[in-house]
Image 1: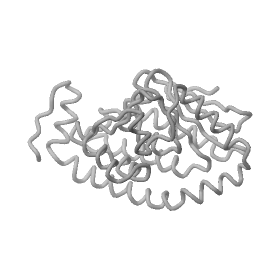
Image 2: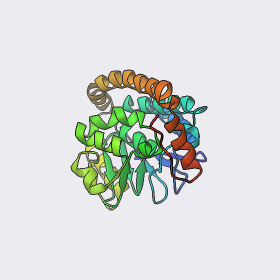
Image 3: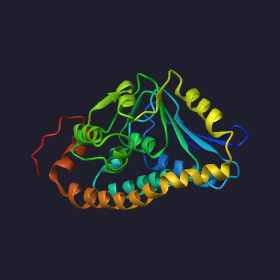
Image 4: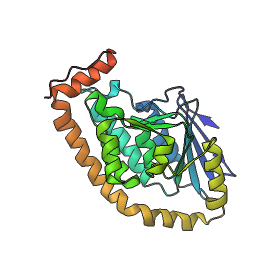
Length: 257
């Protein structure tokens, strides 16, 4: 097993399944270090012969509380978005299915990373949300990814309200593939039954067939939302106030400008 400070990486099922485990509990913040570690692990195994799946999960009681708020500040957010969006594109364009297992909170940038994978298994008491609006900002990647996973009305609800939903509601709207008390075991069982017996060559073609149009669309859409975030949102007074208030642990004072 290879292990960075923030990510455990190992091969399972005789090299057919790549295991990635966020390893900075309890928050498992998706900061620059975590993003870089995920990108490096995926790149290192992308062309592995016989690879038929990836399982992404997390150490501790929570999948991820989200991205680093400090890295959202005006002088750092361009670099943060570039790294996160490159990882998300790499995940959506990966040649094998990326299965995701979620326990506890799966929020913000953590949910964006989960959405970039394939099916999500979750505990019934897991919670999913894009709380960025509560900080006076929005979720760029989730604005592109959520409408692929759920109906447009449900996507807008989550993106505009910033509310979190339980696993049962996430299942009902199609955000989650299935609920399980042990989501890692359920995802692994799915791999064993449905992916492991397949030809890796055929599986790669099937993944490309279903994902290629989305990859093209996502590359364009991510560039659009990045420009909106950097050139418009981050020039507003309220975006900077919301981030500063969160870091200062106080309520934001909106001026609506």
